[in-house]
Image (cartoon, rainbow, N blue to C red; front, side):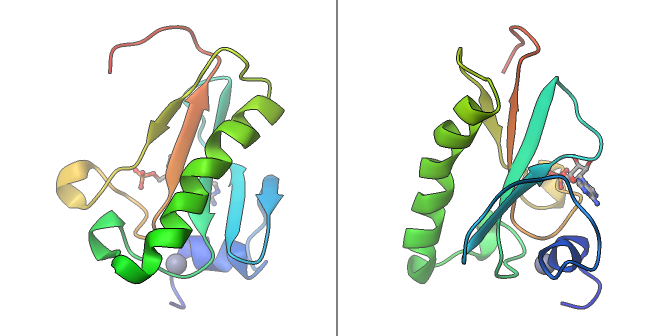
Length: 111
Ligand code: AMP
Ligand code: ZN
């Protein structure tokens, strides 16, 4: 996906503040944080959104979820965190490469 900004980050063509990387997943800080800690976990594979996942992505999706509390703790979020996946235009998604926001450190907030 040549014009996908997150694919370019995966390829190292655009820099990021990396939090974690393995063969399937990448995590990096959001460029426009909404809280003291705000990073995202993405699959390296270009998947447009959660609406474009299938049974073959079961392991990948499970790994994204399992990684979240581990990295959140590593980033100092000992008291909990929010996970957000915006899906599709109706869900407010702006970057069409699946990503899970991990947000915390900003005190309580609704929803
Ligand atoms: P969403 O609305 O869930 O699609 O969110 C897209 C997120 O990507 C926004 O929070 C942006 O701040 C973030 N973002 C866009 N470009 C970059 C970038 N180059 N590096 C890090 N985060 C980015
Ligand atoms: Zn992509």
